Length: 179
Image (cartoon, rainbow, N blue to C red; front, side, top):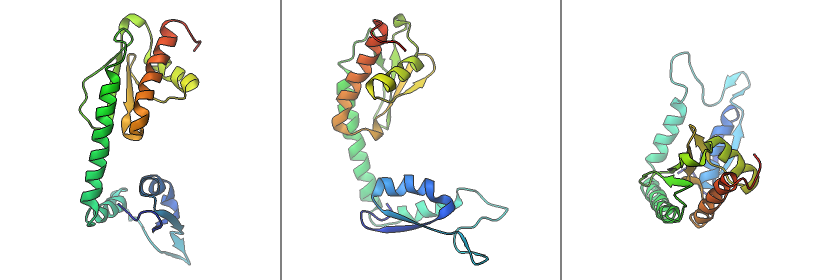
């Protein structure tokens, strides 16, 4: 939304981290920082005693959404997420239902999987095992659910993600690896 490869966005130094993550990583824009306070005066974003902390961010996002390219960019993101959804949904059909069962999901960014209670496995143990032994990160929710954030995984990597997930659960169910 802001800039793009080879374009610059100036951000006050105290706010660098959030903007770098939001804009530079996603758009390819070059982010430069500027001191927020210089020569005894604030040179950019300031906050009074009344107001909302995210107000500056909201103004920036509003301006970005008014850009002529915003509609096309949003549509491209929708198209990309829909393609990832279809690939993931297909890959999940190959899961062994004695280990994991995908819960219904409709596009979006996340898929939730339920561990079969008969395995006796805990979601957090699976999460740690996947990270340590399969270089795969998922989110444990409660005792029996794992969340996949497919919004941040390349479409081509989704089938392998599902294979690693099943392999990791199978490792622990059959006692193939230590926690």
